[in-house]
Amino acid sequence: MSDAAKIIAVAKAEVGTHESRSGGHWVNDSKYNRWFGKIPGYDRDGYGYPWCAVFVAWCADKAGLAKLYPKTAGCSTAVAWYKNQGRFSEYPAIGAQIFFGPGGGSHTGLVYDYDATYVYTIEGNTNTDGSAEGDGVYLKRRARRDSYVYGYGYPKFAEGIKSADPKWAAEAPKPAPKPAPAKPSAKPSVSLANVVAAAKRDPKLPQGGTTHAADVKLVEAALKAEGLLPAKYAADGSFGSLTVKAYAAWQRKLGFSGKDADGIPGKSSLEKLGAKHGFTVKA
Image (cartoon, rainbow, N blue to C red):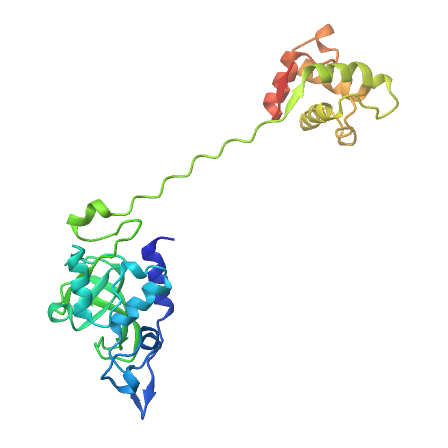
């Protein structure tokens, strides 16, 4: 999973989370504030401060990307952090930190998508109206050209960043390499010498006797597929008299006659049987 996808997944999982209430009112004290720590001078024993920037920092920490986002409760401080690294733009980017208001100091969130008209965000300390002093984590849709949108901080993702800013095209994530085509499975191999020996010896053995069963079974299966060998004799590995008869029929099917169609496999007939039924022939 890409860095951008990691933090977006963490942030989306928080949608619906709310800050604490007291006396019938939302009081800014959230689990994100408790993670970040006290700030002297605020209510709720120092935990009742606006937490939109802290929410982004918390998501980055949980995604294992703490070094890529500023850990601060101040939006203006976060803007300066990105600008000092030369990673700030007026264009949206996937996984970027969006900033609102004069100098970007009013509110912030995370971008999870954008198009030509809108930017789609996950924001903490907002509400259904998009306030900078809300009550929870919400998915929002913001107009890209809204004057309230100040700009975007770009984290330095390992994969690069997908941005609408043409100046950042060089950092666009590279397409995933196409997987190498699967190598075809190696075909089984039949030894010509083994099946010739079996065709000469097995008919003289007691019923079902075998000489080179593994090789013969492949030939039997092919002869069965050709409709030349009954199924009950097509898997015993014995090149008995019925198999010899079936192989002779295969040779005649290929146009051989006389001694060339005596049921003893030859190189040409065996290779043609293998080519049709999925095995190779070795001497």
